[in-house]
Image (cartoon, rainbow, N blue to C red):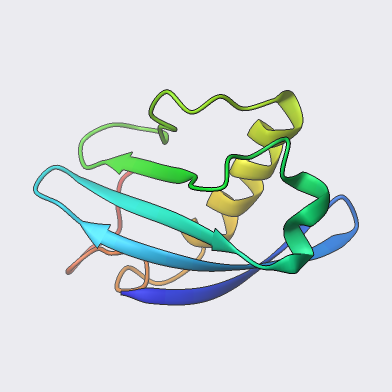
Length: 98
């Protein structure tokens, strides 16, 4: 399932399309970004994924190198994703425990 999201970061509005893939034990959020992201390319990889394990707190970036600014941006993106209803986040019936 693909959904557009808007993230405010460092006084800029960034647009992303999130491809949400539910797997047996996790949910993978693959981020596709548009031209608003150009300034942050060195901080977050082009093919960046956020992974949420079903029974673990927090999120994973799966060996993706992030700068400190990239980590802050990933947390801002996750805050937007986390605020959505369970169906948007890839959950079937309930929210993911964080």
